[in-house]
Image 1 (cartoon, helix red, strand yellow):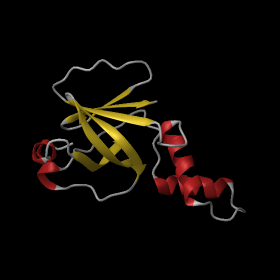
Image 2: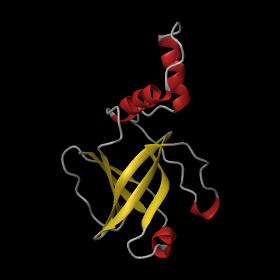
Image 3: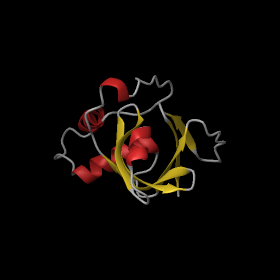
Image 4: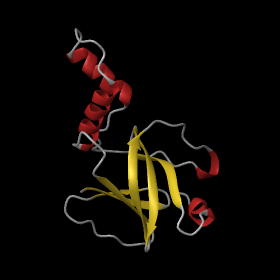
Length: 141
């Protein structure tokens, strides 16, 4: 979450932005300001062209990620079920979410975004992801 986006936002404005959660796992997230952090109002699967230049995010090295890109999911599904007709997109997205998040839907996903300077101790069942300017805290309601 670029500091410039936050500074340019009008009071009570909403940030809607592409967000890479894990390697190859991209979401479009709508954030609202809540006290000293941002909280997601909605999240949806997406794909986007990554930023380049000064505001580009550094390539993160993930060690224990089980994230798969959408093409890999399609290849796995097609290898397992070669005789089936192509699956509907909503079923493929559910499978993709299940593999990457352990949940078939993003409906109950909450993402809180804190400044990197804030010390945050994760609660049970929360995942913290450090980004360039932001600390993301993911949880399922």
